Image 1 (tube, rainbow, N blue to C red):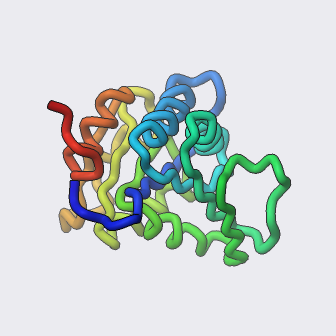
Image 2 (cartoon, rainbow, N blue to C red; image 1 turned 90 degrees about the vertical axis):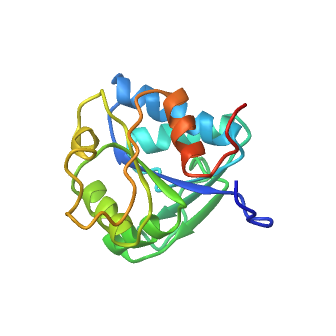
Length: 175
């Protein structure tokens, strides 16, 4: 793991999946994994899956930064340690893309696609969840474009996610 001084690695969790799906459950496991590894979770907490990842990270004692589109603070039960209301609507997607050392992608809709493309353009590694369907499933075979601007490291379990984070140098490899 590279020397980052006092800053912990930051990983964005983006996407959308509904409760009851396998992807939703894996979003929660991803939040737990990031917290256990001492990483800062960056999440808008706006979709059920990203909110669940944040809640599980907080339950593990992790740090969660939430960048939200409106210009007002959310209710006090918002699942975050730090909330940043940016007041720029969908332009917030650029802040999400830039705020992480890597981006975990879970399922997704149009907003997720824009965040993925922005992360790609700014050379942030992408960690798409595979094996659960949804938009993230296609990302390893269909990157945003042909330029190979960033790494795409798929995962299908919390163990595989941890291995991919180690591959990126964000956690020390086991051994």
